Length: 388
Image (tube, rainbow, N blue to C red; front, side):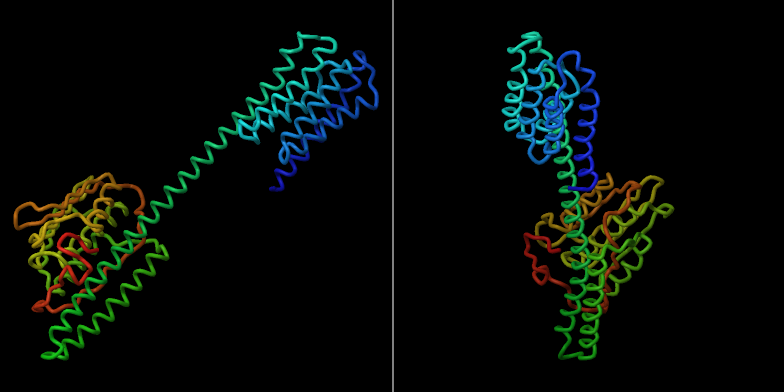
């Protein structure tokens, strides 16, 4: 039990005891105040110390002492404060089905005095009120606390789910792009190992560098580093793809003003994922990228030759669409003609911080004239599945 809670648990009985004994002489005109009367007040106040650990038994003890006090001829007085506290504790601490029998038993005990003397049956109403009101308040408080607890648990669950989803998306972006570079260089090395050993050695060195960089990015992602790349790095990304043998045409329209971090990061990730998919799936290794800036949004359009198999949304496209929708934007990835596939994203200038940790694209170092292009199967794909 926290120190503050322990203090409150101990303070309430002491306060009830002081009030009960201090006011007891005021009721001497109704009945003789004896040591037994004082003992009843002490027992009632002292039993409230058990209201958290044993709320039901504590209530019965308080009810018995209170009933004996009233049967002795004393009117309703401060001892009923102890009774009210005990009734409230039962409603607050116990589930309704368990609390009701204790409350009913306490009510029956307290109302005994109405059949043994004044005020008679007239005392049923006030006697019942001393049970009904505190019990209702305690039960209502319990319902409120339970609702708040459920809401906190649901909020924590949603946060945990969102974090898992964010992390999986970031790992996908980092590892997927790195593996694309590694697979490209591995195919090159296999193709030229007998005829051009020097180029094969260069490809193997590139594999080592790409793997090292991908691991570094993965560590940064898991560490939750605070910054992400943006569209200012778009030309560098396209250059790396061109080095790998992908013909990329980049057009920027409008004034590329400073974008909000969330929009900037999401736009870069969408561009990166789209170009990675071109590297892995396109019928021809070429893409046209158009970035259009406006005062309130940024528009991305990545067009490439359609893949030779039917398009089905995979994790990468789903992740891109989720990034866009998180900012209140839209993303469409579909065949715009029998031979063309287009990713079109419209992203408003969001003001929220990006949910993703930083990322640096892995290097793609392949000769432009390389006859090797990645195959979907190498990446664990099939004609009916989008890899990474």
